[in-house]
Structure formats: structure tokens, C-alpha cells
Amino acid sequence: MQIDCATAKPRLLYEILTAAVSPRPIAWVSTMGADASHNLAPFSFYNVFSAVPPVLGFATGYAGPDKSPKDTLANIRANGEFVVNMVDSRLIAAMNETSANLPYGQSEFERAGLAMSPSRIVTPPRVAEVRIAFECHRRDIIDLGGSALILGDILSVYLADDLMSEEGRVRLSSEEMDTIGRLGGDDYLGLNGLMRLARPLN
Ligand SMILES: Cc1cc2nc3c(=O)[nH]c(=O)nc-3n(C[C@H](O)[C@H](O)[C@H](O)COP(=O)(O)O)c2cc1C
Image (cartoon, rainbow, N blue to C red; front, side, top):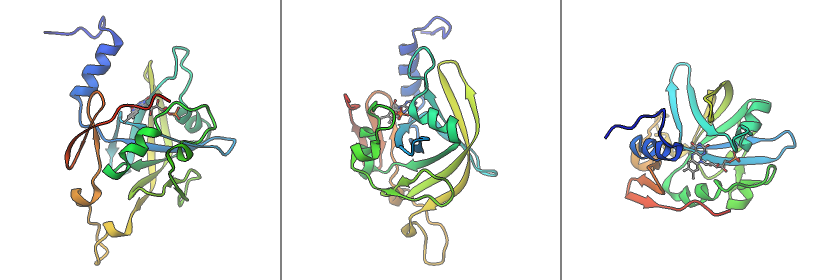
């Protein structure tokens, strides 16, 4: 079978691409609004693209055909700052909760019962429970038609102390980080195998 992308239904393309390009890492992105509101949401169209300089990117679909932005994109457009938190298997349920479509200004931290820790350089806080987080500043926002690709310069990396060895060397073992990956449908992949979690109905 051969599928012509020019004529295929958007839903079909989405299902094929998200199932085939997997597992994908998850950027759990915290931002702040001009009204000082806190926002947190997961994005799995995410990866790192350069180590020197450190640059990552993730894409957010528009919230509607009028290209209205999701809250994350609106906040990054406004002030350029965000924190990418890495999700480990303990946090999968809380991460999923934060994908609910809340009205602008309502905090997903509160909804998911998550604490905040201050960042070192940027204004948005990180999720206190995570063991790795990247403080970022917007490098570019590229309109892709149905979504926007946000590229960020990583300004500072937070690593939980126990991820460092006694000699001060970084010791990022896969077992200790226990990060999860996104598969197609409602599936996730962790060190202990497949997990399935439906999105919240709001
Ligand atoms: C694991 C996971 C991955 C997601 N990945 C994306 C993504 O890559 N792009 C996107 O636009 N939405 C993605 N979503 C949906 C957003 O998290 C959801 O639309 C959220 O409400 C956006 O929040 P915001 O309006 O506060 O920015 C994902 C949801 C989950 C649970």
C-alpha cells in the first residue's frame, strides 16, 4: 500500500506518523502568562537538535482552524521563556492530567496536584517532582501550517543531585532516569514495558 500525503485525511496521517515515529520523548512544558498565570502541558513532537549550542524543539498544533494558539504557544510568543521538564514513569498520570484543555489562566499544576520549584534563569518554574529540566529561551518559532515548531536555546540544565556521582561526574543511567516515551494511540513505553493511559475528558 502507498499513501499519497497530498490527498490523505489529516487524522490518518496523524495516526500513521505518531505510531511509526515512536517512541518519542515528551516535553512537559511550563510557561507563564503576562497575568502571572502558570501553564503546564505535554508535547511529544519533541527532540533535541544540537548539543553545542544546546537547542531543542517541539511542535504545538493550533487550537483551531483559525490558527488560534494553544496556551503554551501564546505564552512563548509573548515572553520567550519556557522550561522543558522530563517525565519519568512515576509522573505519567500527572503528566496526562496536564494535557486537559483548561481555560487560559487556569493552572494545570493545581489540577494535577504538582508542586513548583523556581528556575535559575527563566521566570517559569519547573515541576518540583522531576529530576531533569531544561530552562529555555525561544530561538525561533516556525509556522508549519497546522502547527508551530518552537526552537529553544537551553540556558540551564537542572539535574537532581542523585543523578551525579560522588566524584561530581554526571551519571545518567537509563534505570535511574526512568524516562517514558510516547507511542501511537494511548500507549507509552517505559523500562517496565508498555503502559496505556487515555487522555482526560476534561
Ligand atoms: C503525551 C502527550 C503528548 C502530546 N503531544 C502533543 C504535541 O506534540 N503537540 C500538541 O499540539 N499537543 C500535544 N498534546 C496535547 C496537548 O498537551 C494539549 O493540547 C494541551 O491541552 C495543550 O495545553 P496548553 O493549551 O496549555 O498549551 C499531547 C498530549 C499528551 C498527553
